[in-house]
Length: 202
Image 1 (tube, rainbow, N blue to C red):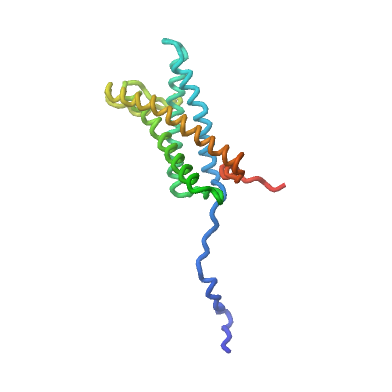
Image 2 (image 1 turned 90 degrees about the vertical axis):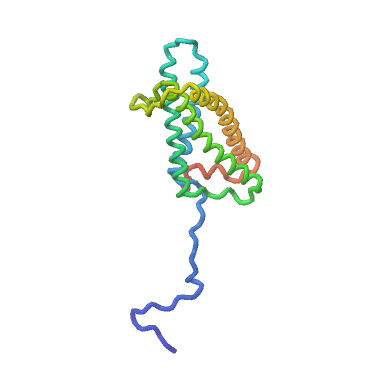
């Protein structure tokens, strides 16, 4: 029988040479969770702000502040959506809970990507309708986005898209929340935990 010489690596079993895939994550990482909840908070702020803004009487002194806040939050949501997409490209989402029906998986994926699209399209249309109408697009008074050549037709088209798009956002947000509630209350499969920080053992 041949014995390995001193210092030589002993031959490993053939099974050990097979590559071992890392386990799939069970929850989103801290960056993805932060971006998700920050986006949610901004949506909770910008939507009622838009309603209040449009309900103001003409020449109301609060209009300037409300419009500036609305534009600034919209620009922030646009930047966050782009950042989330870039992060998602290199940090895949954890799988849905085992046993989730195929139709629910397909619906979840479709609603998520449509929500991403809406989070990009709404701020972009808001920027175009403002900049093409000759108005500034400030960001919390720190700087202004570049303006566009004045174009009334483009501004009107963007305004129509922005007003119609709000209903798409409302529908997608409601579907998203109802889906989470269904998982938590009906299926009780721990889906919400994917977007929450890990709990320390007692």
